[in-house]
Length: 103
Image 1 (spheres, rainbow, N blue to C red):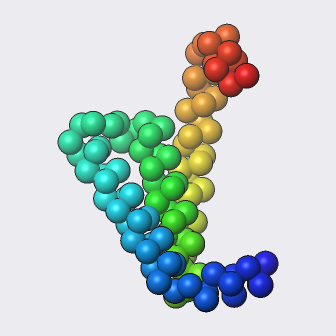
Image 2 (cartoon, rainbow, N blue to C red):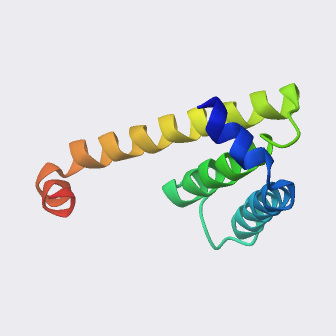
Image 3 (cartoon, rainbow, N blue to C red):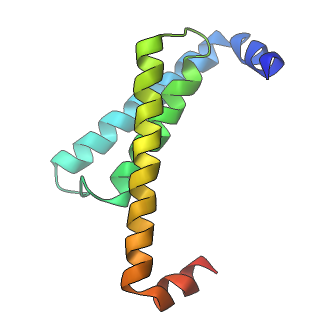
């Protein structure tokens, strides 16, 4: 694992670009919620935040910041938890429909 992290650190410009894409993902998701294109309580927004946080987290390999690390881990954990709740609720409300989709 240490070798992999050292390998990533050899590409600081790439890590910075990944972080910028994460930032843009956060902003685009927030804009879509504010303009009514997606629901702030929906799976799409939660998934957008998980992806954005993951990208920013990857970028921290090059320039670690504890506060940013904790924020990104929190967004990922809470987002995945919310997605899991939505999937469970959807399965409970219509188990046959969601079983067919997941198979």
